[in-house]
Picture 1 (cartoon, rainbow, N blue to C red):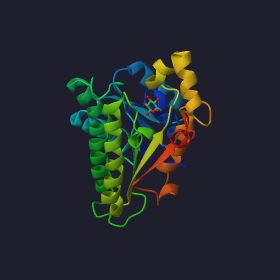
Picture 2: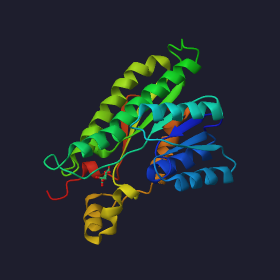
Picture 3: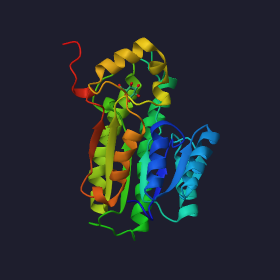
Picture 4: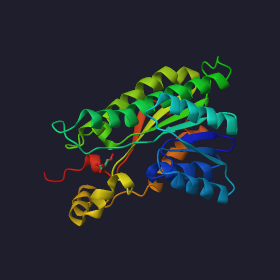
Length: 262
Ligand code: BGC
């Protein structure tokens, strides 16, 4: 589905990002796996991709830094020649409320979850427009930008306020950039997972009581595996999704529609 495509996945060394990097590569894309601090984990993702004949590159960088993002794009172009799919996946949360969030917490979460996706979108879109001749008005399939958001782009999570604010911003980035970039043939789509078995949820899943409460809130009765998110991302990254833009797909086992406690 993705032969001859080149993708960047930020935070591709773990969790949902890792599953996405592997899935895009399985579908034929060359993948740049960005990581922040775990070089070994990123190298393992690269190895796994190469094991089944795929092409991969690892690039360290903090997505909250525009110059790191530029390096990520430059290194991808050096290695693979073009950029077709940008997955702004890197994310973090502090689990702090409006009353106890520090300036540092706020800047960190906004920096990674929103600024990183904003400038990741900008730099990727500039490259996609350039490589399509710069005049690609009304083209189709000139690029895909996929923002990994959360149910919390639209659904409050008390005690996780900076994260909700960042994801709410990401929701509007997806919509506004989607409208702006549509004439260039570039689509911008959000994917909003619910609870997934990833490092971000390690604390909750390690505590039997919290885990049971979470499972009880999810109609499907369990958290998702990262692979259950990656399949949709691969389809959105392909030419098959050409009419989908400026919107979010939720994959949440029904959690947003549940009425637990009523
Ligand atoms: C958050 C998790 C939370 C899940 C479901 C995710 O976006 O990162 O902390 O458990 O949403 O509420």
